[in-house]
Length: 196
Image 1 (tube, rainbow, N blue to C red):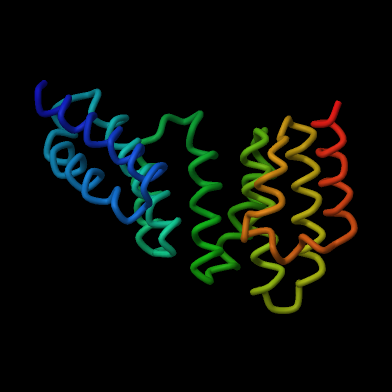
Image 2 (cartoon, rainbow, N blue to C red):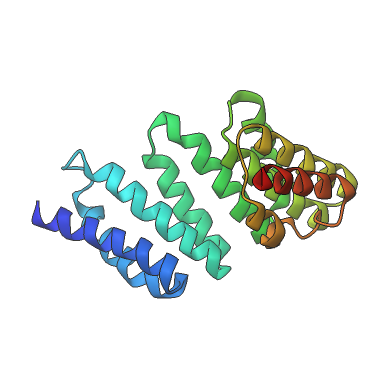
């Protein structure tokens, strides 16, 4: 049990370091947690979810560092260990890393699948928008369709409660659609709401 507590501490420390000092510095903590937990996973039932959190945290760190292949691998590990109700959220995050890696076709296909069979939350709609925005730059022939889809998914996110104006203004994943008039409408609406 002491080993598991050490691993949990490493995982939380990884999250803190990633958010406070930077993604690259967090990897040591995540790797330490994974090294402790992986051999215990088959024998201790609670380890699966703890390891899922470690993989998800490390995937986010890799994504922030632009190491998308490693992020995709860790998102897959997190997905495998996630409870059913969490799998769609993890799949959406993995799709963003896939799109950033250049595997736009797979990312768009996954997002389209998720859109058809889930009830996405605001953050998932936002991630769908990011995938379509990235695809609008990198996809063959569907640039305008993907750009429109990106903005449509942002509207869905706003309707589901998304209100992060700062992310809309600064997230590089949305650069491809930021100058569109329909994107500017969303931004104006959220700024109006926040001023009330």
